[in-house]
Image 1: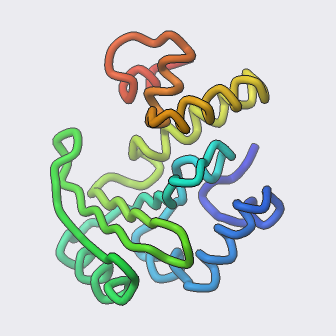
Image 2 (image 1 turned 120 degrees about the vertical axis):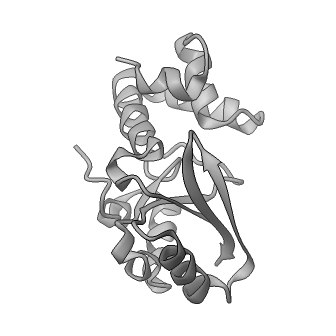
Image 3 (image 1 turned 30 degrees about the horizontal axis):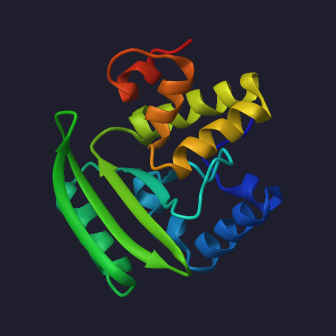
Length: 173
């Protein structure tokens, strides 16, 4: 089983995964976020990324203002930097976006431990599904994503899950 709490697995991944490893390492992104238990989630870890995929990093903050200040201080020099606050599933959320060495980066922080956030939970479930369903299924997910369908809705469509795809995926077994 892959340990997704570190990015070491990317070193031996496909070319794009190795590139992600190099970019994140070279710019010390996860090191700069270390106090917030950062975890790379989304499509790159499980090899279902497409050209427009971004690097999604979930973080856990206890002090929202401190987290926001750290994000601004460490990343505001990057291209297209923007930061905003929102409420996501009734939880205060800080989201930062920027462009880094050809990749869009999204840092998603909540006052929920990283391993309990939906992004990480989805990653584990999607990885398990991909492992059990095989390469044809993975290619079908990628094809749907290329048509503009987001990751969780693509999984829900292929698995015939009812209701909200983000919630349905969390209960899939």
